[in-house]
Image 1 (cartoon, helix red, strand yellow):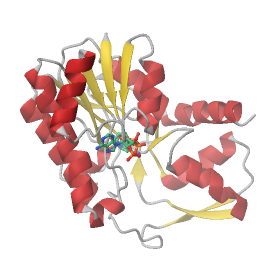
Image 2 (tube, protein in one colour):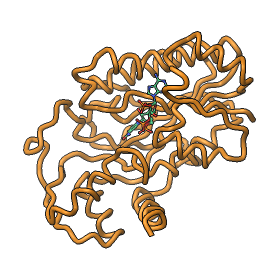
Image 3 (cartoon, protein in one colour):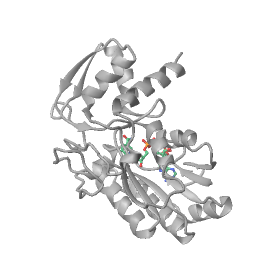
Image 4 (cartoon, protein in one colour):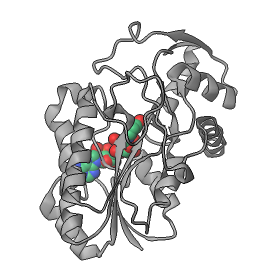
Length: 277
Ligand SMILES: NC(=O)c1ccc[n+]([C@@H]2O[C@H](COP(=O)([O-])OP(=O)(O)OC[C@H]3O[C@@H](n4cnc5c(N)ncnc54)[C@H](OP(=O)(O)O)[C@@H]3O)[C@@H](O)[C@H]2O)c1
């Protein structure tokens, strides 16, 4: 199938290029194509004849979204709205990626697809508005919510913590719980949706749950990094955007459950070693 990967140069976009390699891929990102521009998107779909769009593009800087309302609106609401309208007009399905931060973190058990979202930071509010825009414009939508995404490329928590290890000791937040998700695992999960018609919301995140502290310890252990990890609280590490205390995701689509987050760390470490050998 001919598939347009929107946001093809981001960390998920690059992982999708591998997981969807058996298809004919159309890769688009800034600056070649502005996905928030409806004329450019319409032209791209008509010129390429893509039969499905996977949207991995977004405004992903959670802290910057608090101050840059226009940027977050454009990346997280306009892009999915434009893509959903353009795909609906051509009777094409859209796979749109969203986030665990649509939830407020008050739960004690992992959020299911049927739970009501209630975001409490600007990033989460715009991502939820983007989900709603996609759902209302195109009935043929898959909304894939993921969490704590990392890979061996791009900017992400795992690479930040590996870079910080030279300090000899790091303090890491231990009172936020979520599902670290290795981008290639998510991309493989998304690939399973291709060609299907069970439209709706899907939670796809590394199975199980941990804290940022737990993730850091696992990363250092997997890569034999010699650095002390000390737990700290969210209050001790203030950020511009509030984070949900608990945003672990679970799924009712058990056949599409992603590998355990620990397996994500294992696979990340193997890929990282290969790339830095
Ligand atoms: N990262 C996480 O921890 C996380 C957690 C939960 C959910 N998610 C969701 O997962 C998805 C993928 O995230 P990611 O971490 O792979 O993102 P990413 O690495 O930031 O990649 C996003 C890509 O989209 C591009 N883009 C932004 N605005 C665009 C526009 N107007 N036109 C064309 N391209 C545009 C970006 O280009 P520039 O770099 O040039 O701006 C970038 O290449 C997003 O929907 C995100 O909200 C991420």
